[in-house]
Image (cartoon, rainbow, N blue to C red):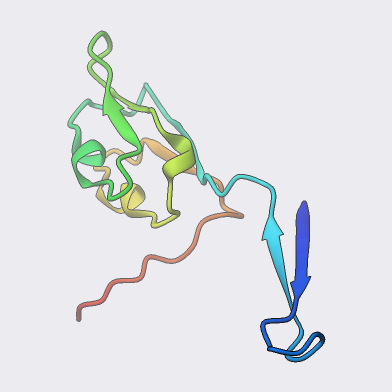
Length: 101
């Protein structure tokens, strides 16, 4: 993984409470593609994506990935797609976490 590291000290004296933060330089985007053979154009991914990553293509009448850099890796598109048309990178996929029972 390609990373940068920042180091510093939030304390009032230099060297007090040292810290370092690793920053990933690779994009977080997990969505690889929407399979046009599987997508039925229902638009559920478009209306349910909390990051507004998808749009409907007017010509093909299918969902397209328009803002991949806004993907938050929530995986909701995988859960709601009735045809399993969305492909997500397995190494970047995280488990779906919900805040209700």
